[in-house]
Image (cartoon, rainbow, N blue to C red; front, side, top):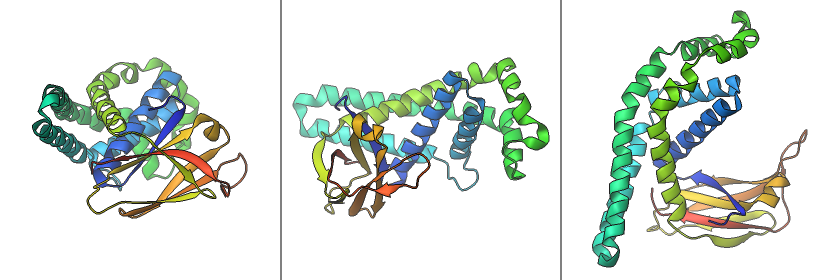
Length: 259
C-alpha cells in the first residue's frame, strides 16, 4: 500500500463489519490510554464490552471474527494445493491465522470476566441507563481525572488482557489490506459506482484517499447493496453541514475477496 494513501474500509458482510468495528474500537481505546483521555477511554471501553458481550443493539462479534479466521485459513490451504511452489509460505500463513484464532479463544473468557466485574464500566452503564452519560448526578466530571490518575487497572490489567486480541485483529487486518493491489479510479463529479459480479464474493471495500484530500476535509461514503456500491465524496468543514463534491475526485480502490 502506498504511504501517501489513507485506507478507509467499508465492510459489506456481517463478518467484516464485526472485524472493522472491533478493530477501530480497540484502536480508539488504546489511543485514549496513551493520550490520557479518560472520557474517550471509558466510552470506547463500553463499546468494546457491548461488542464482546452482545449488550444493547450489538450481537457478540467473537463468532464472526473466528469464522473469518477460518475462512481465510481455508482459502490459503486451497491455494497451497493449487500452487505447490508457494505451499510452504501459504501453510505458514495458515499456521499464523490458526495461532491468532486460538489466542482469541483463550483471551476472550478472562477479558469478559474482567469487563463484567469492572466498577468503572458498571457505573458508566448505570449512567447511560439513566440517560446521564456525563455523570452529573455522581460528580463524574469533577473526579474522573483524579480516579484515572490513581487507578492503575486501566494501565496494567486491561492492556494485558487485550494484547493477544489486538495482535490477532491487527494481523488479519494487515493480511486483508495486503491481499490485493490498489486500482486507481476517478469519481466523476465526486461520485462513482462499483459493480461486482455474482462470483466475486467481495466482503470488504477499501478506499484509498490521499492525505492532501483528507486535509481538505474530503471523505468518502458508501451506500448500496452487495452487487452494487455507490461511492460519494463529501467535504466536511467546521461549523458547516457536509457538502457533496461535484468535481472529479481521484482515489484508489481495493476489493477484498473474503466475505
